[in-house]
Image 1 (cartoon, rainbow, N blue to C red):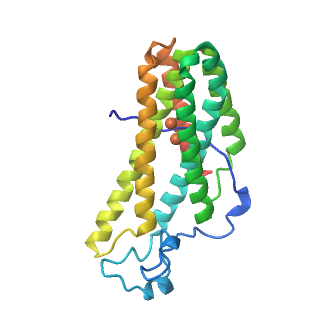
Image 2 (tube, rainbow, N blue to C red; image 1 turned 90 degrees about the horizontal axis):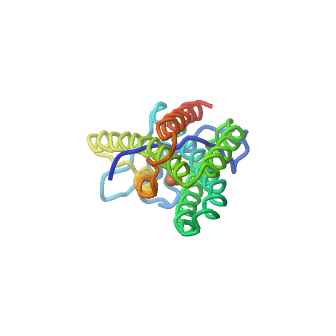
Image 3 (cartoon, rainbow, N blue to C red; image 1 turned 135 degrees about the horizontal axis):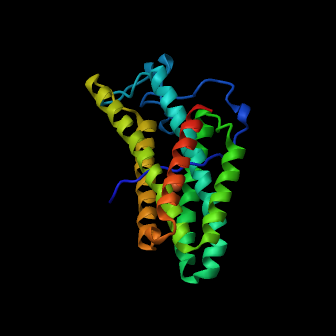
Length: 249
Ligand SMILES: [Fe+2]
Ligand SMILES: [Fe+2]
C-alpha cells in the first residue's frame, strides 16, 4: 500500500482546554499491578512491586518523550475530529449526486468516528489538553468538506487523497519513534510496557485505515479533479500547517 500521510484539521475537545492542570499522567505500573491502568511512563513507587517473569516495562519516559507523546496525541485527536467533520460536510452533496457512494462515505465516516473516539479516550486518560486551535480547525474542516463536496465527487476524493497522504506520513513518523523507543528499551532489558505497545498497535491500525481511505479516493477518480494539482497542493500544505500548529498550541 502506498505511503501517504496526515490529516490536518483539528480540534474536538471533549476536555476543557484548562484540563491540563497536572503534567502528563504517563505512568507505568509494574506487571503485578492492575494491567488496565498501566501507562506510558513511570513512577518509582509503581515499579517496586513488579514481579514480572519477563523484562520490566520502561521505568520512565524522558521529558522529550513525554512531549513527543503529548504533541502527537493532541494532533491525532484534532485530526480525527477534523476528518469526521470533513465527511459530515461532504456526504450530503456527494450522496445526492452519486447515491452509490453512500456506503463508502458512511464506511469512511464510521472509521473516522472510531479513530476520534480512540484519541478522545487517550487524551482524557493521560490528561492531555486538546489543541487551543480547536474552533479554528473545526471551522476549517467543515469548510473544506463542504467546499470540496459541492465541487463534486472528484474534488471530494482529491480532498481525501490529500488529507490521507499527510496523515499517513504523520502516523508513520509516530510508529517509527515508538519502534526506536522499543529498541532502546530492549537494549536496557526493558519493554515499552502495555500502554505504549497498545498505542503503537492502535496507531498502526488507524494508519492502515487511513491508507485504505486514500486508496478508495484514488479508485473514485481523485486524480480527475479539476484543478487537481491546486487542490492537492493547497490541502496538503494546510494539513502540514495545522499539524505543526497543533503540535505546539
Ligand atoms: Fe482517521
Ligand atoms: Fe481517514
